[in-house]
Length: 295
Image (cartoon, rainbow, N blue to C red; front, top):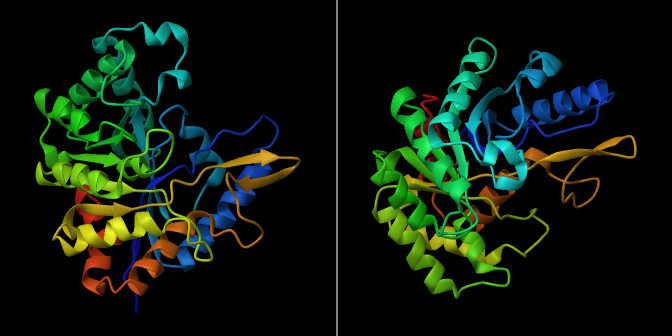
C-alpha cells in the first residue's frame, strides 16, 4: 500500500467572482474528496493574497485537512499603498491576519516571494516582515524563488531564521524560460541550497501522459541519489478559476486533468525512474509533515 501524501504547495483558495459561491464550493468538495480517496491527508495552501476564512465557511467539512498561510506574494498582488509600508507595518498586518484565522483554519506557514536574487524595496521589506513573524510565532517560511533561491535563503538566515525552517519553492524553473540555465548549473544551485540546510519544493510537473517535465523529474531523481531525499518535496502548485459558468484548473489538460493529484503523477514517474519507496515516502509525506509540524 502506498504511503499517505501531503501536498505542501497548492492553491485551494483561488479567487472567484461574486455570485459563484455555490459553484466553487461544489467543485472544491468534489476535488478534495477525490484527493482524499487517492491518499492525500493534508494540503497546505500558499495563496498569500486572499482571506481564507471565506473558504472555510464555504467548504465546510471536507475529508482533507487544509492549512492556510499568511504572507506576501509578488508586488502586483499587493495594493500600491501597502507596497510603501515599512517592514514593521507589514509584519503587524500578518500577525493580525493570523489572529483572525485562529479557531477557523490552522496556519501552517509564512509565505514570501521575489522575482530574483536582487530584491525590490517592497520585496526586501516583505522578507524582513516574514522573518519577524517567524521569530515571534515559530511558523516556517515558504518562498517563491524561481530565481535567486540561495540569495533568498541567506537573507532570511541573516535575519535570524534557521535554514531548516525555510522551504524554497520553484528553483527548478531555472531550467526553462528566457534566462534558462544548463541542467548541471541548476543542479549545483539546488545542491548549494540543500547543503545550507533548506528544503526545496519542486512544482513544475506535468500529467502522467506528458514527458514535458522529464528534465525536472531527472533533477529530483539525481538529488535523491545524491542523498537529499530528506530535504525535497514535490507539489502540483494547482489553482483554479471560474470560466463560462464552469470551474476549471488553470492549465487544465482536458477532462482527465489530475487537478490536485498532479503530484501523484510525479510520484509515479519517479517510481518509474527507480526512485526507492523509502525516498518517495520522505519526498511526498514525511518531509512536509516534519517541516509544517503535521505529525
